[in-house]
Length: 213
View 1 (tube, rainbow, N blue to C red):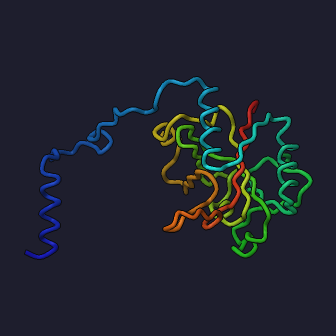
View 2 (view 1 turned 90 degrees about the horizontal axis):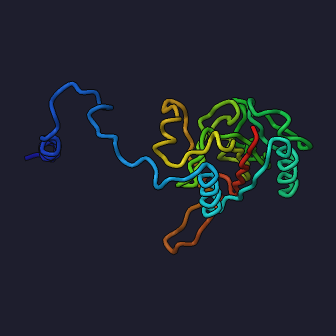
């Protein structure tokens, strides 16, 4: 028996109990599993998001619409950022007092690496996992602009963009869009568990939970 026949035989045995009909995949699979763990109020869900973001070493801030520009200016100043990359659809008044670099398709990785910080919005934030998801919308820009600069500030609208669980987030996302799932700053560990940050993304992630918008 060849390796091919062996593998196909295992596949046939694995699917032997699958009904041979034309039932759509969405209906054939039981989706009645738990969609969130426990019952939480909106405030508790947002607090859980903040807690899990911090657990992943993201820096969490809270602001209202009026105070957002001054907060972003302060965060960029504290980082010593002289240039900030801004997606085309991000409100222009969010970032003030710093040279803005617009997201262009022709920008090279070297040019993006020379930018000090990037400010974006997000598509959704997941409380149970401390994850923010970007989908390439105009206020988030191309995926690469959040992977190359060393400092990323992401603004999350509260409570509109906050969900409890991954299944709830999936219901809001378009799977045909370029989704980027971010749980804290980029980091990895070697075999001795020495943590290194900024390997394949920003070394510093700051998340602003924006209320009142």
